[in-house]
Image (cartoon, rainbow, N blue to C red; front, side, top):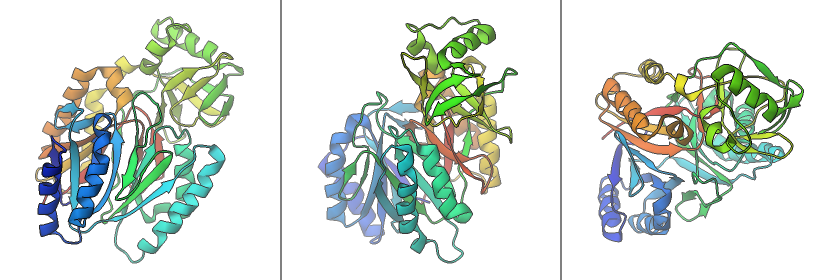
Length: 384
């Protein structure tokens, strides 16, 4: 894990040169993982130049905003310093469903030579949020790497869901890609969303990737609006869909009881719904409601998972990815309170992270990696 984390409020040449030069003096083989807010993405070239001049490795991702303790900020950058730069690969990742196997093969081929011996590893993946097939990419990666690593990560990009180059290393800035960072510590990501499971269940009878065509053999939107009315007393039509959909996501109910949240983001003329993340055909679905989201239970679940992976967080920083859709659900003030509750109850030194557009983690230690919406992902981040 990183040896130190530093938030730079300014990204001018002098600030970057001073920060990276000081780290180079301490760790000649070191490197940096940078989290950059969308408003500052023009500074990436400056960051790359500073890393080259300091002879430090570099990798990073662009997010809608950053998490700084108990608030969200849109300026500056988080820099996570490593005494020894981890292995990093930035790989093209076309969004088509059928392309995920090829992407996984290229990634796994690059990673395998660095997985020798018994040293534990965590694979942190940053994916372009415009890839609708991240869950399939995780499936394909697990087929090749299995539990030789634990998995964590988040989707990067713009909250407008317009394409931007959002992943970078020391020389490239790319969109439609995936950035893999192989850490020298094996901690499963703590991940939770806090949605309870309503009693009424349906079936996604026809889907293509992240598009739901039919639910219970009827147009998906017809069933969606009926469920919203019957379960929550909310009237949703085509005009109000975009204002309401983020507050009433689908939940995919897995056999082990785990709920995968899928936020619908687009409505087609034929009544089909596009979601963030794939919805496999014959998935058992339920309609969730943001106001029933249990924030206290979410924080408690994260704390229990973190406690299982190591000692107290009191002397450590906490790396956190917080879903942008969840922030829309709760509102900024409630989202900030949730993060502050996590910081206070974990007794972490700081909370450092970003507002994400989809989250990657496992439901149990060493378990299968899953793609989530509306979740929090937390990892330990050791200070120096």
